[in-house]
Length: 148
Image (cartoon, rainbow, N blue to C red; front, side):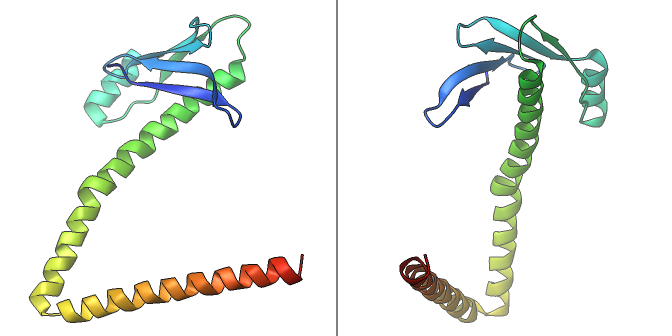
């Protein structure tokens, strides 16, 4: 399965473009709703070498078909770059860094014999969030009822 994204319009999600990448993520094609290739993006040789040596290389060539909205294509390319960057970072944090931090914190609390204190703190903070939520709902009710 090749990685792909879609670009949709409006609330109904009408697909405008589909972006299909090669298996290595070196190139991708942008296709319109008629499945015609309207743009192709490829990492340059220089970028591929930088990626292997330094871990990052961002140069790409972008070929856009005549008559296609260049600003839309450039926005798509920029967006894909941002999504890819944040996806890797968020995945690392969610599946590696955060569980490691939680494990270390749990170990430290256990070693210090503070499980009861930690449990009491968690219960108190959850209770505070619950009461703050109730106050927020009450404030919204008064605002919407008497001040709108």
